Length: 316
Image (cartoon, rainbow, N blue to C red):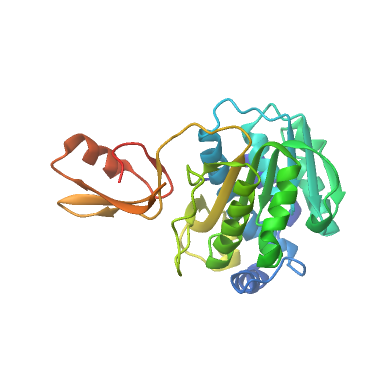
């Protein structure tokens, strides 16, 4: 996945020739340790984190939309918007958007979001309403689509369920929560999932059911979004590989029943000569499906199966 050309150009215009190599390394360590973005170096964030989180949000949004064909939101709430990452991902997928509200408690990010949006092809994004507010004190508003991307990570785990419920109350159709693909991120998503189901939500993705999550113990549900690195991104990280894999987790909750699509593949498929084994999230629990090479058609489809996609063939 590549960063959209208009967003890449807007980022380049803001960043100029500045180097974010030192701050980028420190910021990566801070995020891994669970720090918030309160004192983040903006140059480093825009160079490395925004492209990575955009790739993750775009992947998660595509998976959610696959379960809700025909969904055409007119309004978006980008909760904890940062520089407007989720707004860019949504605007690229929905020409139906007429109104975007970007909400964040950091005025620095709201200023950057406004500056970046000026370069967008989307009139809704260029004209977005920006509100300085805390997720604990959400304003009274409604949106067809609400996205909270890497937002719950800024809050204590104990608050994840309550914040998810507050966002749900302001959502008319689809709430998408995206978090870092870490045990902590998954713990927040699991708390949010339980609360949203209790509040009547259908889970559109990644799990296609509302039974208790089958992932327990020290394991966690996460996926990876591969993005192409820009030259500035590679320089900032001191990288030699032209791509990066961003680990992420997500939860899509809907007020309309999603289309049954199959079972989510939870880990990279395991290939061997006699068979391919898929690790699946099934309503009755996590299960391994072994597809023998002698079963030619299923085996052929299994060879193309990818981590994070849906298996719609034989079930476990």
